Amino acid sequence: MIGAIRLVRPALRRPPPSNTRTLATGSIKERFNHMRKEYGMGFLIYFGVAYVSTGAVLYGAVELGGVDCLEAFERLDATLGTSIEPHIRKNVNPKLGNLAVVAAVNEALDVVRIPIVVATTPAVVNAARRFLFRK
Image (cartoon, rainbow, N blue to C red; front, side, top):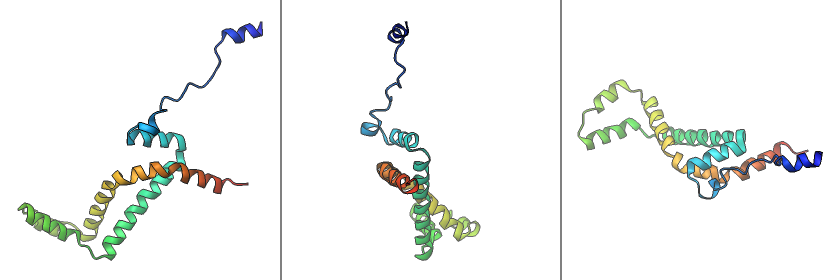
C-alpha cells in the first residue's frame, strides 16, 4: 500500500530554477538580482564596500588634487551662456559642492562597477566564506 502511494504521489522535488538563463544571457539587472539572491549578504557587503571605497577615493582625489568643482560650474556656466554662477558662488559651500559632484560621478560609475562586482562576486564571496568559516 505504501508503495502504491509513492507511485501515485509525484516526487517532491524542487522545481528547476526559473532563472537558468540569467547568468548566461540575462541583463545586468537580472544578473544583479540573481547575485543578490544566490550570495545574499556577502554580495551586498561586497557591493557596498566597492561603492563606498570608490566614493572615498574620488573624494580624496578631488580634495587632495585641489580640484574646485565650483570652478567647473563657472566654466559650464560660461559655455552654456547662463547666469547661474553668481548664485552658486554665493549660496553653495565649496566642500559640499565638491561632495555633490563626487556623489554624482560615483553614481555614474555604477555602469562600470556593477558588471565588475557581478563578475567577481562568486570568487570573492567563496574565498571569504572559506577564510571566515574554516575549521
